[in-house]
Length: 120
Image 1 (cartoon, rainbow, N blue to C red):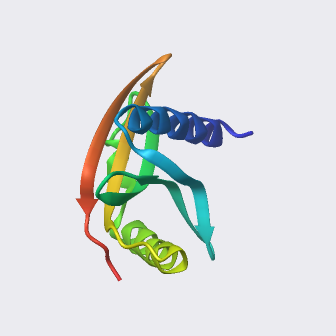
Image 2 (cartoon, rainbow, N blue to C red):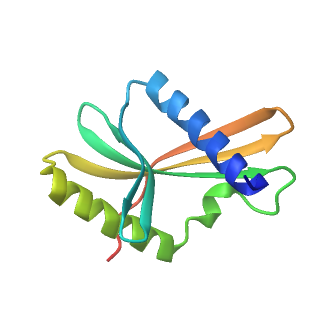
């Protein structure tokens, strides 16, 4: 397994634990539609959260969340639209980002709820 994939999986596991501790329930992880993937799909009392997890090692020249470009947002929006249709979801949809910076064995996590609106 490459170092980047390992870091990404470690970030997703950390994000999942953090979100579950705050009451969200995992519906799907690494859900795919065509070539698009949503890292975590979580359910809260009032919304479905489509969560993109970005992790980097320190020192980094940018924040991990900055990698969620408009193109990535468009891909996530399209995949989420299909998930909502497929599952007949009736709750509000939110697009969140969990940005993680690893420094050795330590990690700093930044949660950005409602990070962007759907882009089509």
